Length: 198
Ligand code: ADP
Image (cartoon, rainbow, N blue to C red; front, side, top):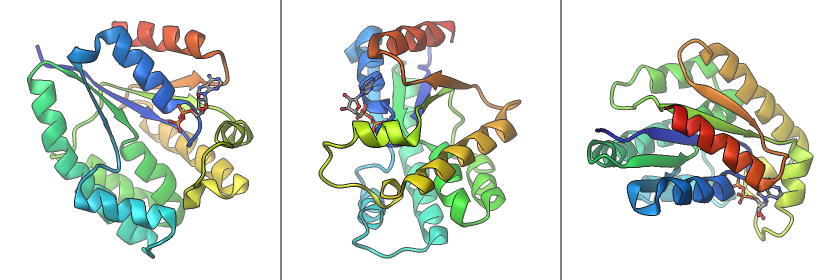
């Protein structure tokens, strides 16, 4: 049986990595493939440089770089799913819609990703929802903040954009909004029970 493709989305500091590790251990660490976007490839490296602010790229270039990175990533994801492993991915095309959709045409970014047959649709997307100020508080120990996380107002706009996108996709995608301000274990139990349904 093919594995399930599970995506986690949310602002930085919303608790994605924490819940991904918990879900992986509940599912059985050897039965899952953990991955993230941007990937560890050369294109992923260019994206990370731009996110750190050390390389200048326009929002259109960023949208195209993420698209190319995602197309390669799908080859790897596909192999693991076919081998029967569940794939858990930290960020996917919803992040492109929210972040690049703020600065270039959202419909273009959505069309490029959703209209591409080499980019698969997740079985479920968990959106870790926490207020930007709480995310910021949780990230206070991080040495470096990415360009999108420097400004609280921008984080709020990004969260709003995620919700705009989820409302556009509500009939075609399985998106679960998770109240991620709760205790780590409470959230983890809810996510595991939702995963059990698929
Ligand atoms: P992300 O991967 O979304 O950036 P992390 O999982 O790295 O977020 O979490 C950011 C910080 O918040 C970490 O220090 C983590 O231990 C803490 N954290 C995660 N989830 C919770 C939670 N539900 N309650 C309190 N702190 C949390």
